[in-house]
Length: 145
Ligand code: ADP
Ligand code: RBF
Ligand code: MG
Image (cartoon, rainbow, N blue to C red; front, side, top):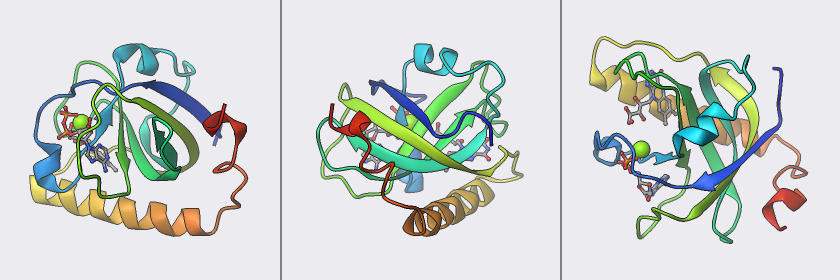
């Protein structure tokens, strides 16, 4: 996959307010500038890698980059689900991510349940793939500088 690994950082902003949290999958949204800063030919889809909220520990994540065909967004968005149970929201925190690998293209679904099922599977695949990765990127100076 071209452009990987890819490092991104930015403040967490309010997203679409669709209640992804209620779907069991809150997604920390980046400001539009971050999406606009991606390489022009970056392929939309679901990716996995490492994430860090402020100077917290580096954790596994899945990130959806694209237009969400299920909702037909007008603008490309970058939303990260950190694979960890947080006690509180972290809006306005600095979120750093390192995108390590590609999982699948964005898809349309005929029901919300199918979207939720797909996301659950993504989280499992991401977690498994990251177990097999070397820790080099997780320990990259990007996360400590
Ligand atoms: P929004 O539409 O504002 O993005 P979400 O329902 O997607 O709302 O919730 C996202 C917010 O939930 C994040 O900005 C963050 O503050 C919080 N949050 C809590 N746990 C997580 C997590 N594991 N991954 C991502 N965001 C989380
Ligand atoms: N939206 C889609 O329309 N199609 C998808 O295939 C899709 N896959 C996603 C995979 C993951 C891991 C995550 C976190 C989100 C995905 N979304 C997808 C975006 C989802 O629609 C979005 O998080 C909610 O609409 C909240 O903004
Ligand atoms: Mg969100």
